Image 1 (cartoon, helix red, strand yellow):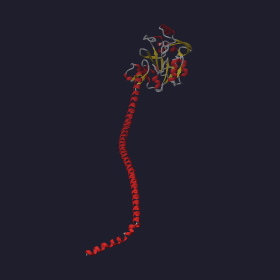
Image 2 (spheres, helix red, strand yellow; image 1 turned 45 degrees about the vertical axis):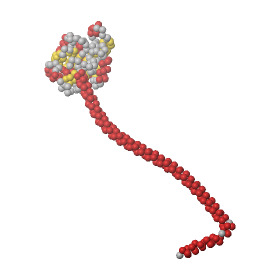
Image 3 (cartoon, rainbow, N blue to C red; image 1 turned 60 degrees about the vertical axis):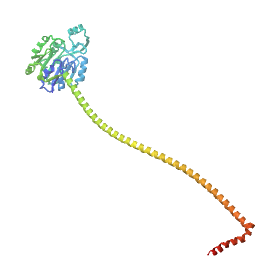
Length: 370
């Protein structure tokens, strides 16, 4: 896995090359500024190291407290004595300084400075109070915008001896070297110059002179590191790829679900079409049965009409029959009356002998014919 460099000038790469063999090391960062941006110590913090972050700027101190809860974070300035000092803070900048000459230059350039009195302590006092008993200080980084000599003068180099020193060695925002002002303090305290990167100078304690060889070359491909910006880009890329992979899985799932829905839709369509066919068939059957019903109703109406006519005819015939029967009865009664009248008449009585003679005439005539 590549080492991620967060530092401004790859200071953490050089330090990691020399100290990668140390587990759970300890550092002191004087002028820590941001816990993330241009931080020399973040990579070490993420590797399990702990230390002391010294930052008098309230804004960045609060960030350190939030981002480095297991470190010792001090909102103080560091110098050659204990007391109070006037700090000149510049918003969103690492140029804040306790050096009044630099503060005057910043004002002349039109920069806004916010003066604030802050507690001032020394490296010796800070180390005595906060460095764990028996613990080594593996590196000390100093970035205090012109206040370096005062910081270095405030340490007891016999008692507190960081293995490696990284000290900003140019004037603020320039390539003008200024290490002559304080380097004698370091070398006379038993430190060996090891490396200069154009911004900082590196020193190694004589008792750890074997580390000097780690500073023979500048950061290079063999350090196997990437910058924080590249790391952030790669993380975003990984997140994007993960999101894309998740989106693809989701898309595949949606496609599968869509396929199921389409299959269900086809099935539903087929059922709907079958239902429509059945409905059409039922409609046809209904219309056919409706026609048959209409025809049956018409036939019933015709039969009813015919029955009415038949009943009327029957009534007419019955009336006629009754009339005829009545007429026949009348005629029969008249004939009876006529016969009775004949039988009772005088002529009928007078002709009675003749009728008796007439009865025998046919017998006489039949006898003669034989």
